[in-house]
Length: 444
Image 1 (cartoon, rainbow, N blue to C red):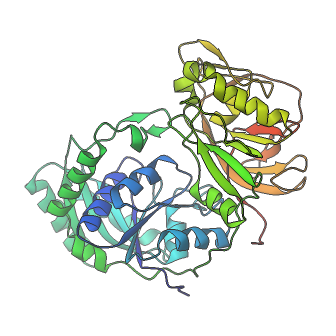
Image 2: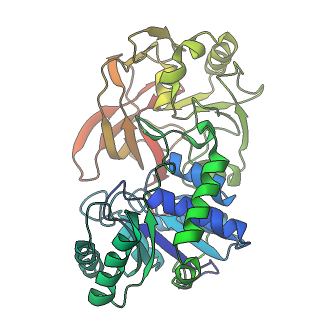
Image 3: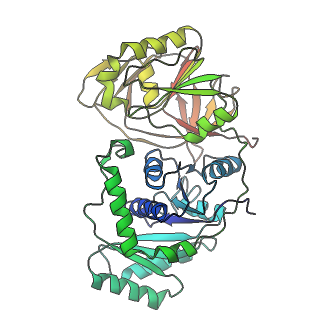
C-alpha cells in the first residue's frame, strides 16, 4: 500500500568498496542539477554517508535500519525527508544480502520492504564476461528482490565495457546494463578509522560532487535508470517517537568532534514538544542557559582531546548542568568526554569532564562493532527499567577503567547473545558506547 511517497530505487552491490557511494552521489548531484526533485536514503547505521548525500542532493538523508527501527519509525523518517520529491535514491550497506544476521536488516530487506528495485554496482576491474555470472547469481538469489539493472564500475577500456555488456545481453537480456564507469582515480574519498572523512572536512567537496555528476552523465543512462523506479510500499506516517526526550530544553553538542547524531531522534524530540539548541564544545561554548538536559553525541573527540581538555567554559557548563540535577547523556565519543580521562592515539592522556568514572584510550585500538539490544537497567529518561532500545556500537576505544557506579544498560547482540552491562550512570549523568536508534516496543 502506498502513502503518497515518491517512487524509489536502491543502489546496491555484491560487497563494500564496489562503488555504491560514488554512483549514489553522482546521481544525486546530476538529478539535482537537472531540476529533478530527488531525495535520498541510506540503509543501516551510518552517520557519514548521509552527510555526503545531503551535500550532493540538497536534502536531509534519513537512515533506514530494518533491524533497529520499527515499521512506524521507518515510515516516519521517509515521509519527513521525501516531501516534494519525485524520486528516492537509496544507497545500500555492505553487500546486497548482508545484514544483522544472515540477511535480516540487509539492503535486500529494505528493497523488499519498500518495493524498490535494485541497481547492482559491480566492480569489474578484475573480471570480464564472468561478471555476468555474478549478476545472475545475485538476481536469482531471492525471488522477492528484483535486480532491475546493473552498472559496471572501474572498467579499464571501451573493449572491456563491450565484453561486459555483450555477456549481459547474452546471459541476462532482461537486466539492462545502465552504464560502465571507467577507473576514475581522482574520484576517491579519504578515509579514517570509522569510515570516510566527514563531508564537512573534505577539502573541496563541491568539486568532487560536480565531477561525480559529470562522470555519471557521461557514462550512465540516467533516463533509463529513472524509469526503473517503483512505487514506495509504505504509508506516510510522521507521528512516531523513536526515543523519549531527555528534557524540555535540550542542548545538543554539534561540531566536528560531536557529529554522529541521528536527525530522526532530534525530530522526534521536537515533535514531542522539546526545544533543541546547539553548542560547540570545540569552540569552548557551554550549553545554553536554561537547558534542562545535555546530549553529547558520538564523533571524533579523540582527534581533539587536547583542545577539549583545555576548554574551561565548555567543561564548566557541563558540570553546572549536572550539579543542577539535570540529565546529561553521552553516546560513544560523548561518553568518553563525560569520563575522567581520554588517552589519544599518541599515548597522551587528557583530563575530561570527570562526571563519570570512566577512563578510555586509543593508544591500543580494538574494534567494537555490531548491533545492540539495550535493556534499561534502572528507570530514567529513556523509559522504565526493563524497557528495550535498539542501536549499534562502532568504535576503536578501549576502556582502561570503569568505576562501580550503576550500569546504564544490559546489552545483547543481534543474535540474542548477552554481552553484559554497558555504560554507567551517576545520578542523572549517564552514557554508554551504544548509539541509540529506536525503541523496541510496537507503540508509537
